[in-house]
Image (tube, rainbow, N blue to C red):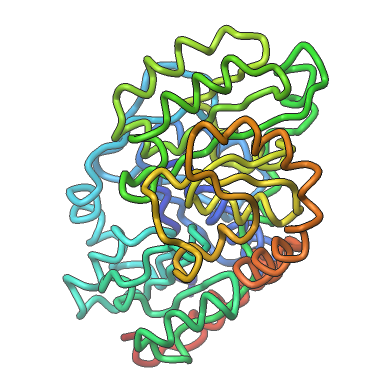
Length: 381
């Protein structure tokens, strides 16, 4: 009898794709006989995944109810998503006929939380890391099995009551994503006219955690006026949605030869810019942890005047100088390379603790975990 398919939900932002697709590849390699259904919400998702799965005969791309066909765009350009909850409700009867659903966000876990009698087992994989990751959402407990990058991250869920046999540390799955925009296509000649070091500014998307609402335009203005650094401005997709003034602010500097603005392409989410940058400037975004997998200088913006030194939520700020006054920003950037030796060991410790194994083996380990869930038809929640 033909095996029931394993479903992967590519319904949310494209930033989730690199955290999910390595599991697809590893499963396809380990079990060529196992059908894999990749449910997509837009033609952008479909276009990306079609190019990467054309050689995998057991993979089927499926359009979720409410699928949105977008006008012709650059491959990977940030899509406008259909409403996810109506899509999930319409998709639920089809998912009920699958053995396992793999997702990378909490919204999809409304299904097992709202319909606990569903026999389909949900495997949730992480997409954010670091001391500020949100872990208290009750939907997370509805997953049959949870995949996290590190033992440190696993411990945070155990402390919240998750059963030890329902959560596993696999290593950082995104490190196994092979479809990143090649560095040679980004850096340096394709972006900048000269070979200055590259700074990446990535404010968090949530206002209470972000430097953007209070300081963002002033930071951009200071980066516009200086000439020691080439600058990449590639904000989080959700910040672009929540801060409508951001597009206009960045448009005013987009034509400068030492500034590269990217608001929509897949390179903003696939790890290309964190790989290309020489210095990270930000606040509390989990992209810092990804950046620190290869330690480099970092500078943090304390736009909310936090008393952060003894706050475990701000543990990542031990990885570089913290700017409390915007008048100190450019001096802090100037001294960051020379001061990096002070922070390099701490950076390695932070990255190792948060990411676990970042060698690229996480996708295969996650696939093995999915197969163990598949082989165990016992109680699922």
